[in-house]
Picture 1 (cartoon, helix red, strand yellow):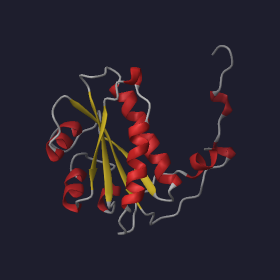
Picture 2: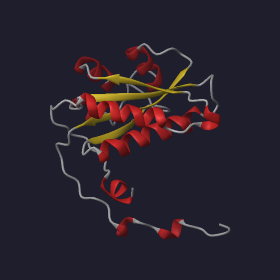
Picture 3: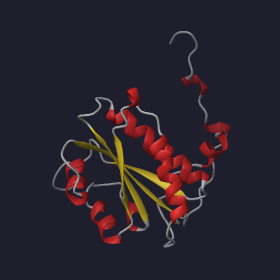
Length: 171
């Protein structure tokens, strides 16, 4: 796990190579196996491989969507906000587990935040709902861009750790 965490970096440039169905299936299983509060499982995923749709998603946020220009695959992580009052936490768990599995498979990813963000015209969540035909009761946490890495980033090492952020017994 530590090696996966050290090597996982936000990748913003991908090759054209598609993600295999086998790898996609593993990624989706990780999302489906993710724990959720009280076992309610409010999180759902929308797999998008159509390039035109991916480019439409790029317009759903003012900044930070560069990876969508080259990503061959995105997974929108959404959750039924009526089913769980902690859908944000549950969807966050799914989003990061997807990224860790992607790294384990030797692929790259980046989390593109949509909740509490804006497009040029409206709320990013609303914009994504429109593009992907998502019912209103679903919160849209993130879009995870996934692909074969077309950039190299140096892994983290222990010098990046700040143990001043660890407290024992009390703050």
